[in-house]
Amino acid sequence: MFGRVIFFLSCLMCSVSAYAEQVPGVVIDHRYASTRQYIGSPSIVIAPNGDYVASHDFFGPGASEATSTITRTYISKDRGQTWTQTAEFNESEWGGLFVLKGRVYLMSTSKENGRLVIRTSDDDGHSWSGPHYLTEDAGYCPGPLPFVIHDGRIYHAAEYQNGGPWGEFKAFMMWAPINSDLTKASSWSYSNRLPFPVGDNGFTWLEGNAVIAPDGSVLNILRVQGRQKIAILKLYGATLKLQQFADFPGGSTKFVIHFDSVSKLYWTLSNPALPGEPLAVSEPGSVRNTLAVMSSPDLIHWTPRAIVLHHSDARLYGFHYVDWQFDGSDIIVVSRTAFDDDQGGANSYHNANYLTFHRVKSFRRLGTVRLDGSPFTAAEVVSPQQIDRWSIATTKYAADAPSGAYSQPIGQYGNHATALVTRVKTGEAEQHRDWNDIFVVTAGEASLVSGGHLVDGHLIAPGENRGSSIEGGTVKALQPGSVVHIDAQIPHQLIINSGKSTTYFVVKVKVESAAVR
Image 1 (tube, rainbow, N blue to C red):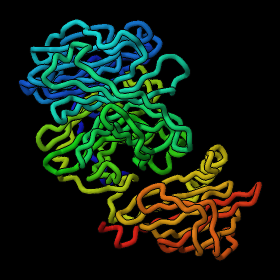
Image 2: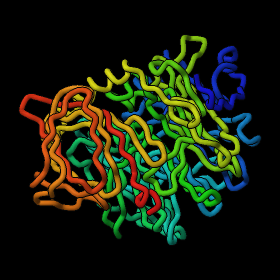
Image 3: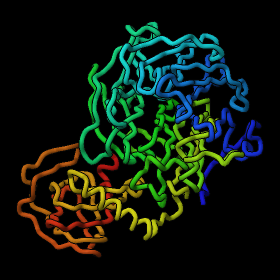
């Protein structure tokens, strides 16, 4: 199925020897599902002496995450072929490794939504200090996510949730001077805590990446629960503000972004919910059976470069929560992996039973793929059954959305993108500077008003104008089979009668002047 899938398989014999040979990558640690202890929070760095250092924690009913979570650390002296456990300590959950000035650090929380804690290693990950508490209060949610250095400071992104139901995360950033003592609470400064905005872009954000933008600004790029999107927040002094949401295959699960100074591109590994997966539209965050490499010049437009791991069963198999680093021309990866073992394997894709190591070789030489695994030279065909599933899902989400509309992205292909859209009530009038729109109505009915000019026109983003209605336009009735072409700069608005809806396939084509802007 996947002509461009790249599997990097090398195995370490362990207690599940017969099955370890089948598990993708190198097995670093394993837990049977019967223990009800699941492997979480994988992290990896390259120590100052060149060894690889990895860590993970345990979660689940058999773990102690509500009181004092256990973390383990490991070292590989042979570039990931074999691994040795070096430490185990408690009061450490959701830990992320980083290296600064010849020292290895692990920042975590003391327990689930606990206090911020940092530990240090002065011998390349062999031994660790005790916990240094950075906060007196609890409610912090850090993770194995990037620490970036910029203008003499080290930055990290995290979330805060103290009580309430899962999902009420407030995004924030923290930073310290690189020459300060990072184990002291007084060295660290914090931004405001920003709640997720009410709207139709998912229902929460979490697991943010500290990233330096092309213009040198400090960003926090977060996973968006329920949508294959990212939220991009920008730090203004000590104030964090939402900039925009952007489409991002795999944006509903945890990902890590790093900038490569050689290719001048941003790179990530993510879990895209591929077309055809049963939960790809309704619950994309629950589809983690595919691991893809992507790159971007600007953090907005992402190009899939390779599918490196995939299993056909998304219910019981997963390669997710990966952390990774550049290692010369390669990318080294640790994964929270749900796979087979000699007691029946993981009990779900989520409850991983392995920590595995992988290597993506010569990543800068990777080509481009579509996220069904076929190269760009091959045609992409979406089945009628998938369109039907998407139509059901978009209708449901449109009814729940304040805007009365929901768009399911299908693909992005250079200068054009495709999507399936359902609208259940009249929305704002629109005018696009940079995009031509082509509609094919697949269900329902609507009236299209186009031409004339926007009433109460206002700019919502560069090249994007909205208005309350259109004055002086032409009205056309739309029904299944109607084909519509709207040039850039033409105001247009879909009018939906009460109790009615319309679903349409849309192709958005960037105009030539915008493509080279």
